[in-house]
Amino acid sequence: MSTAEVTLGSVLVELDEAIGTSAYTAADVEDLRSSIDQQLTEAVDVAAIDPSLLPVRVPKGRVTSVLACPAKALADLGGQIEPIHSLRGAVADVAAVVASMSPRKPLELIDVLEGVAAIDPENIGIEMWRASSREEKAEFTEQLTPLSAAIQRTCSGVSLDWVVRPQFTSQAAFAGGRLLATARYDMLLTQPGRPRSGVVVEVKAGDAHSDHRADAFLYALLETLRTGYSPLAIVTVCTGDPAILVEKVTGGVLESAARRLVAASRILIDMVANPRAEAPEQPGPHCTVCPRRTHCSSVSLAVDAS
Amino acid sequence: MSQRTPRELGQYAQEWARERLQPAALQTAESRYGDASDHERIRLANFGLTTMLDCEARVTASTGFDGWDVLKATRWLAVRSLHRYLSDDGVTNVQRAVRSTMANTIDDAAPDSEFIDGWLKQQPPGVRALLAARSSGWVASLLETVRDADLEAEALKPPPVDGPPMRFYYPGRALMIEARVDGLYGRKNIKGPSAETLLLTVTAPAFVDAILDFEGTAATLASGVAPGFVAAVMPKLGQVHKVAVDTAMIERGLALCERLADLELRSIDGRGATGVARSASFFGCRSCPLSETCSTREEAEAKSTVFGGLQPNP
Ligand code: SF4
Ligand code: SF4
Image (cartoon, rainbow over all chains, first blue to last red; front, side, top):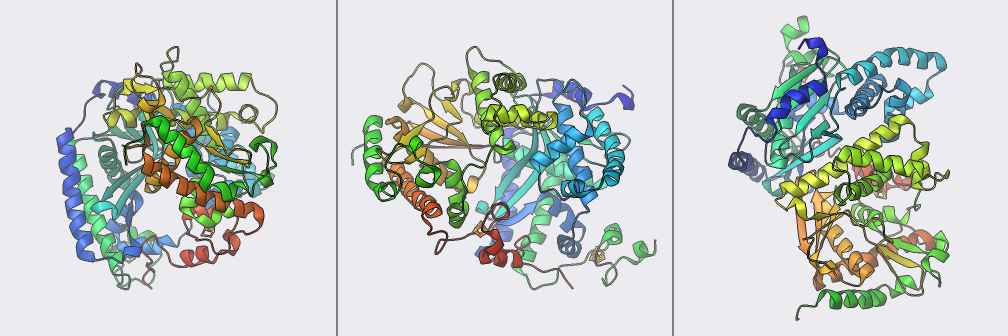
């Protein structure tokens, strides 16, 4: 099959024969869960956190950001996402969902926008759209129509045996509920009549980059902990080439994600327990997009120069 | 205390509800619930309960039913689609069950968007597609969570959608308690409510115990016979939490009803939120009519709880 013909539907057909299998046995999953739990219980116990600040929340995005640079992760908190980026993300998400429902024909951009407005009326991008003039709307339409069409094309061909769950939140509690790890998948696809058929889909309104792979691993871990068996694959749908990336879930993927989750949680536990301490600075390629880069003493000189 | 039979428990719950809720009931209209105006009646149901568990003050500012939206319509469509999927003559594909339920609803729709059928009919294609996706997802979540929790999928029975709603009307007064049932679980050859488990999908695991107490009590009051169990299906955690309906649960459930009734009354008798506990939360405060003037929200927002109240490095 050539790259151009790959759609979510064709990926799911290929994954079909793996349904019912799992990278890990139930006993392996329990071992992994208790190993993470033991390490995080110890970390939370030692940190003696003010109970009013519990539970320590570890959403997926924060794992990536604190592992890159804790100081940047904090600085980024105050930042606002650009309305057009927010709108692009929401259009891509909705386009992916409606296309996965195998409609008779693709939806026009305006229908996709109506969908965004219905589920996320306070989206800053939708507010911007509403407030825009006719000329601005025409400009946005020109920008967003190819995005919506491309994502719908890529997510087409899904059989009605698959059920899509948009914006599905998965949660895993550790240390007796004192630490909550969460992830929100853009889509979770399963065949309700067939056990162990989970496929997590992440939708990007641009190219996929290296962080996405680490994110995919974390999704795989949280889905495994939620259901007791691993998903078949983590699929990233984007507007790059290739437009679909498939990450099969193996034991190695789960163990690597568990290590990252524990490492990020330890940093966060430490930050919450010592609110007056300055968050550690960790230079790297991310310095180029950090709000502190103009005055941070650790800013990577090499990257800065480049 | 010897164990009450399901019927005795039902009677006990109804007698005790009449006694405990009397102070609140006497402040509602002296009429049937349906004949009273919105300002003279109170309805105790799931939405008010979860609001109360999140922030009591927000209940006192509630404006009642403010029309259909995607969230409300998702559950409405999902429960009916689950019914179709699980019925003996049903459709054995979740997506098709949702599509046919939606199509039938729209076909029979009245022009008025006050009712769900009319509202659905007015929705543009993008919104309908999302609704269908969300409802199919809701059904799949319930089915899979029950199966993965090692409960027998065959013992799932269609939720009661055709009969009258499960309600308890306070005699002679405009006070009503409504139970929510998303599915029934029990062996098909054993009949009667006491052999059944009422299933409900719970998306806020933190409140699961109180939600089960309320719903178990409401269902017992409505039918006059206690179900065997109530169970919360929690897809987010992949868990089912099942508890027996007994005297202690009814007592806890009625205490919740009593508190909720007082808060609901405050929204109509002018006492408002004065002296009522407040608790800020991101989504709760966002939709709260009191948020503009609420100091609890302001204080919570001033200290970022995202990282446990940390401020970024200079
Ligand atoms: S400039 Fe680099 S090292 Fe400094 S806070 Fe930002 S990302 Fe971290
Ligand atoms: S603004 Fe928030 S804290 Fe204040 S009453 Fe409303 S929900 Fe409660």
